[in-house]
Structure formats: structure tokens, C-alpha cells
Length: 287
Image 1 (cartoon, helix red, strand yellow):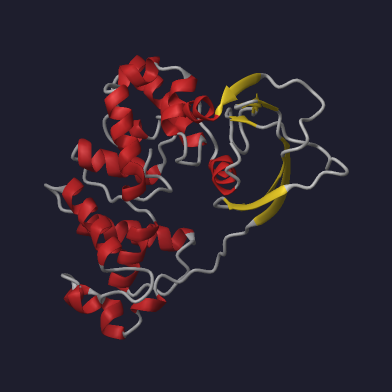
Image 2: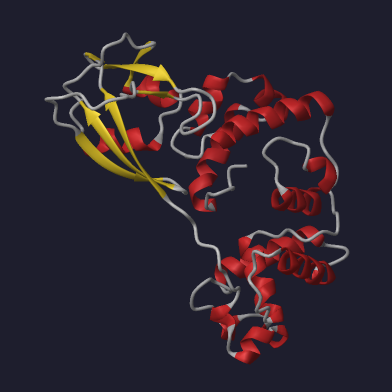
């Protein structure tokens, strides 16, 4: 769950922190939402923390899944994660296909059709299924992941160092950098957000975000529906996967309503501080 949308070097310390404080799935299931969000704080994509908690509760209640079909029933587990878990943990002969694996297989076959189509996905799945080692499917899928990360990179693949170069049709055709073919581009929306900054000494006045949407269930400064006149904001740009945020903070404006809770910076961080607010506190260290 941590490695969805997150690199290993980023996620490793969070994984170690979770295992130290909540070493079993039963511990994870019994933890409070506040503890989960605190352990996840700074990792981003907080919906994963909610799904991790829900998944742990389901597993603690019904037992560990076995095989792709059962893993898919766990909240937060999609086709790629389910196949990875089924092959690595359960020994099921199934290919684990994410964007990196699609890139490797599309180059092996020199597949020239857009990779997003159902025809392409069916072809790659069939091709990959023929390659997966029948006795070591987990090791094989992890080897494909490593190959994609180390050598079969999106740009300037290291074909001359590749251990399967003799099997690669794209290398033979000189088209490796052209595969996979993509026609769909990521649509990024731009959004302005405005926040009051209630203060009591070293404490911040915070409100809890509604479940769903950006920063689901986390505590943030009170968001403003309208821009307060006569106040100069501190402005930060913050990028999420599908959003480009321009965040405005008004340190001289405390808002018009009483916050739900007052916390110090350290207390706020333990409850799960969104990365945009971490950046704000770092950029404007006036505490």
C-alpha cells in the first residue's frame, strides 16, 4: 500500500515505522484513525492510509486472502497489487502488470498499438503469462520490476546491458524508446486554495477535513470560501498527481469561526500533517 505512487527509498522509513508500532495486522486494525494518519504523515495520498486501515480490519475479521481473486476483495488492492501479492505470497502463476511491466513487455514484443486499449492489455497479459516462471512466479515478477527500474527505463533504456536483449524485438528493430505507444495524456487541473491562520502562541487552530476529496480526514487550517480583503497572503505552489495547487495562507487573518482543535506543530504532525502545510511551515519558519 505504501509503494503505490511512492518510490521504495521514500516509503521504506514509513514501512519500518508502521512495523515497529503496529507489528501485526490485528494491531493495525485496532489502531485509531489518528494513529494511522500520524504514522502516515508526510507520505501523501492519504486515501491510501484510510484504505490500509479498512483492509487491515477486513483481514483481521475474515483471515488472510489467498490468490488474486481474494486479494482483490481487500479495500485498496487493485489488479496489479493483487497479482503481485498472489504471486509473491501465494505462489500463484499470474503476471503483475503495472506501467513498468507494460513497458518491458511491449518492448519485448515491439507492440506498436496504444498501450491503453483493451486489445493491448489483453495481448500483454497473454504474453506475460507465457513468460512467468511456473515455479517461481513471485521472483519472476519482482525481476521484471527490477529490470524496468534499472535498465528498461522510459527514456534511454540500457539495452546493451539487458540480460534479455536477445529476446527483445524492439531492440532488434531499434524502436525501444518508442515503446510503449501512449495516446492518453494526464489532465492536470489547477486550483487555488485559501486558508486562515488562527494562532494561540505556538498552537494552531485547526479543523478536520471531510472524508473523501483532498486531505481526507486530516486536520488543516480553516479553508476560506472567499479571499479576505486587505490581507497579504503567503503563497506556495504544491503539486499532486492530478492537481496543481496554489495555496494562499493569511497569517494575519484568523477567520470568522472557532476552530475545532488547537494543536502545536508537533501535535499536528503526529495526527497527519498534509505535505503542503509542511512546506508552508518550512518556507515561512516564523514559529
